Image 1 (cartoon, rainbow, N blue to C red):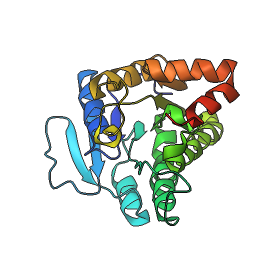
Image 2: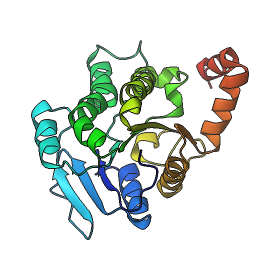
Image 3: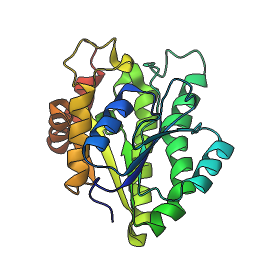
Image 4: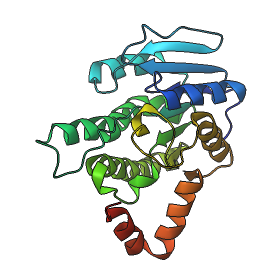
Length: 239
């Protein structure tokens, strides 16, 4: 099973985003042999030494199957693409927002992992799913996002059972708030994308299965271990 980045061939989904760009920089610094930077639109992305932009819409069966057929050397798959509409269950006018969050945060990593599984098994590789600490407890004002990420965490656990016996590591990164466009409305301390990327890769190379990224994530994880209902009530309280 892959536990080091040096010499690895890494595929990152959602590569146009800020977290992905920080991850790509960290992976390159750690000696990744090649990085496939995939996105729905790669027009604004440029190739550089060791980094190859690849058009792949993670919601498209055809796009994902085509990429998997062409990129058989992948040893580390990083499912990073995702969306957060910051919307509560009762506020949303219909189910369109929840559907999109489930599509990108749960079905997309399932689709991509299934497509690349033969290569990962053959290469004794790894899957790293970028989730959130809110996969473990719901923050109601972004409730459907949390629910979709909870599905992503359960997916990670199930994939670990499926792929682990075949020599493939399956890892979840569970960060707290990271300073990106997605969290612009939050007036709380946030990690930089560079710090988050470093902690994620550190945890991956340390062999962790669940990587709690940042003090917020570690604090919530500790609270959930000791008083899960208390944490749930705290996050559900207005203000």
